[in-house]
Amino acid sequence: MSVFWSVWISAITLGVIVGCTWLLFAVRNGQPHQETTEETLGHAFDGIEEYDNPLPKWWFQMFLGTVIFSLIYLVMYPGLGTFPGLLGWTQVGQWETEMAHADENYAPVFAKYATLSISDLQQTENAAGLKMGQRMFASNCALCHGSSASGAHGFPDLTDTDWLYGGNVATIKQTISDGRTGGMPPWGAVLGESGVRDMTHYVLSLSGNDADIDAVNRARPQFQALCTACHGQDGTGLQALGAPNLTDDVWLYGGAFEQVAHTIRTGRNGIMPAHKALLSEAKIHLITAYVYSLSR
Image 1 (cartoon, rainbow, N blue to C red):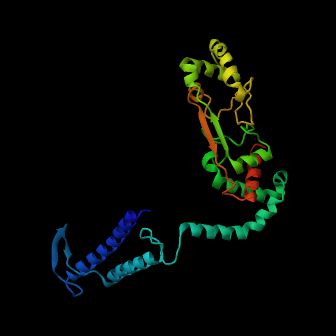
Image 2: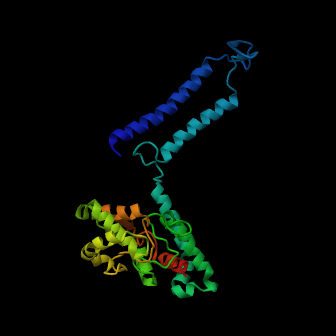
């Protein structure tokens, strides 16, 4: 934060506190000192008149208490621009303290499950470990893959047997730990709009969908020239590159004609973030066990 914005925030914060305090005393000094009065302010509505009585003492004292509390708080904790507060408290520090406390308390539990293989964690007697993996999945992965792990537009369904990079234990763990970056290059400029639509017919035909046979024949040579390096000559994909199988009628971005055409025309870019800097090895192990169990 720059010096200007630090001073700006501090001035507004203190100005509001001082202004409210001044207003409180100004109104109080302008009122009669006796407890009650028969004098009115001239306001009347539906037979109800407003008397010029002072604020109740308890209300006035409570207001002063909030002013004093706010000033003490701003001295002890950050709230005035870049001033850190006398206690040196920060959100990051609080989070790190809580995480360290949790790691200390649950380290033995994670250590116990970390020694078990993924197949052992699938057994009934280790259901508690798999449940822990499910809760961590909900906290770290459900935003993209959904609470039921069934995916969404552009996010893979983890409950089926279709895997972009492979569904074995080692591959799943590597995906969670290191992340993935997938890219489908745009072919609109190369194929032209008519070529894009012909290629769409060809791609849909690979999975048995209705397609124009003439368009399929026109696109076949172009598919062999442009697409087989990733998807293979038969369109079954290449897991080493994360290139999807085009013959199984499973679509990451939708299998409707215009959706497939859009993918071919403009390309796609998918990113699975790495979690090894966010989660311990033991936690990744449990999430791997849970994800592995979803399709089995």
